[in-house]
Image (tube, rainbow, N blue to C red):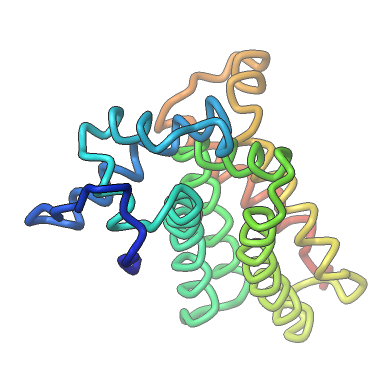
Length: 218
């Protein structure tokens, strides 16, 4: 994340702390639940600073403004998925195994950080075009890479030849994203126990279910 310059509040100057990485993480961690609860528009820099227990000028110093902070939260969440996709695209082994591993890891990350997914969906619904465009940019990049993995599987004969990779991506994203959005409702209504163990089981189940739908009959 880059530091913004010339974006400080009136008559005050931020003095960055000795460990900017720790400070930035603390600000990001404090901002996400506030963005989720109140939305990006209604959340104030003062509220975030109070929640993070930092001088509000540090937020301007590290992120430029509230929109810059939101973009940093978004970039932080997107980077995790990008890293998983990079391993799947560049790794060794059959494409089916690489895609299954990606889906399983993606579900685990998504459920572990469900609040971030809900926050991003709320931001989309708020109608801020600039923020929506950033979310779409990350989503488009991820969708293209997943589609490329599926297309690779079709070309190799591992996946059905009648598949449309774009529709397969939409189905997969719907499965994974809705798990995060409705986890409390879904888990309670099905009497599944929320927690790390069930997230692991759900991740494996989702990967197997999705990959079976792609499987080419031999």
